[in-house]
Length: 418
Image (cartoon, rainbow, N blue to C red; front, side, top):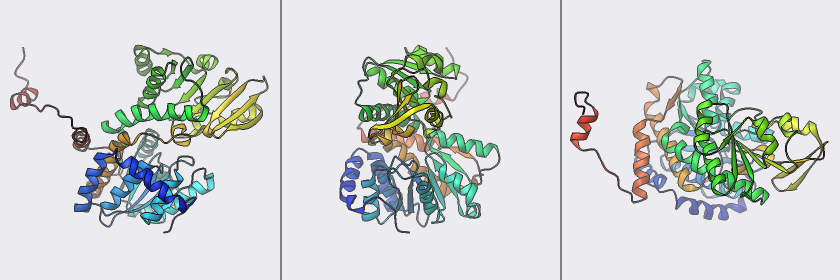
C-alpha cells in the first residue's frame, strides 16, 4: 500500500519518541507480549483512523504483533506527529497516510487510502472512517466484521446511525469503558488541553477567568486543572445535573451569553455545534482567547466570526487574530481544532495505555464474537474493563483486597439484614 507522510527522514526522531512513550505504557506492553504468542488477530486487515501520535504507534505495533495487517490514517488534520508517522512507515513498513496540517481534500483521500485495504475491522476516533465507509463505499461493508470507536463524539454519531438503522456492522464503544473515560477524558484531556493553550499562547492561567463549555468527563478535567493553576473557572452547561455538579465542585455556572462578557480564556468540550457563536464573539473582551478540545472545530462558529472580522492575521504558530469592527480582538487557537493535539502532544502515555489497551482487547473481542453481534453499538465487556484496571494496578505495584467467601455470599443474598 505504500505510505504518505511528510518526511521519512524524520523516522529516527520519531522512533526515539515512541520508545519514550512506550516506557509509560506497561499494560499495552503486557498485551503485546500475549498477542505475539497467541496471534489473536492473525489474518485480519484493520483500518485505523486515529490521532497519529507516539501512543498510537505503540497501539499499532501491538495490533501487528497480534497478527493484524494495519493501515493508519489521521482522525484530525492537525493532530499528526510527522516524525511518528515517518517511523511507522520506515521501520514498520506500515501503510500510514497522515501529514500534520493536511487540507480537507488530503484528509479524506487518506481515509480512502486506508479503506482501500478492504478492512475486516475499523478502528475510529470520531467516526469519520465509518461515515465514509457507509456513505461512499457501501459495496465494501459486507467484508467488515466489526469496529471500535475511541471518543465521545464518535460514539454519539454511531448511536445516531444505529437509531436510524443505518449502521451495518457492530462497533464497540471504547470511549465508554471506565478505564477509558474516567482517566483518559478527565486526566488526559484536562492536562493536555491546558498544556496546549499554554504552549500556543504563553498566557498565564493564574488570575484569569477561564470558561469551560461542557462539564462532561473532559470538561471536568479541564476545569479542575485550570482551577488548580489559579484560574477563576466558569462552567457553561445545558444539562441541569452536570450544572449542579459543577456548582457543588466550587465553580460558577452561567449561560454562555453571560460568560462571553467576562471570560479571558474559553474552551469548548461538548461534542455539539456552534457552542460559541457570533453574538458571543461580539461581546468578548479585547484579547479573549478561544480554543476547542472537542473532536470537531464546529463547536466554534468560525464562519460567523470570519464574516464579523474587519481583519485577520496569524500572530503566532497556532494563534489567529480576528479584529472586529469595534476594534476588539478575538484570538482563535489552532483553527478551532483539538488544541491539545494541534499545539501540544495530546494525552500523556500513561492514560493512553489504558485507552489503547481497551482498543486492543476490543479488537480481539470483535474477532472472536462478531458472529454473535448484530449491527449496534456495544459497551466494552466489563470483564475486559476490570482486566485492564488490574493490569494497570499490577504495573504500578499496587495491591487491593479481594472479597472473602462470606462477603460474596452476603452481596448475593437478600435474607440477611441488620
